[in-house]
Length: 63
Image 1 (cartoon, helix red, strand yellow):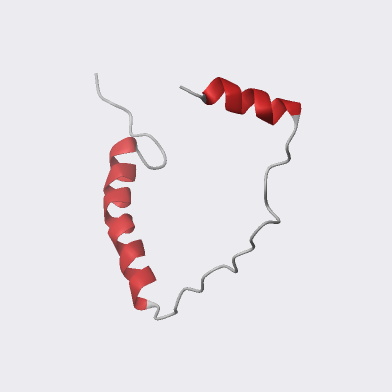
Image 2: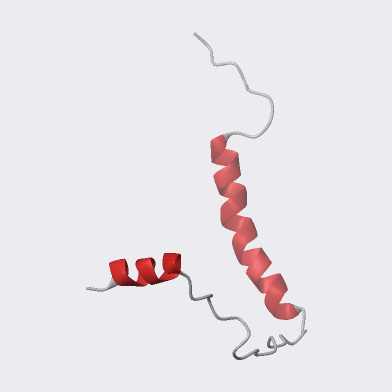
């Protein structure tokens, strides 16, 4: 019996491509030269609301 050639990429072709493209993506990201900007820190406004549900969760999470 002969194996029929499947149309499209096989799993082996995908793994070959993935092993080559991941380092290439890292190299491209490091060579762009742009500098990352830190997000603005907001204090006190993003707290979890104090409800019965959150209190029950905190009580159940204690050891």
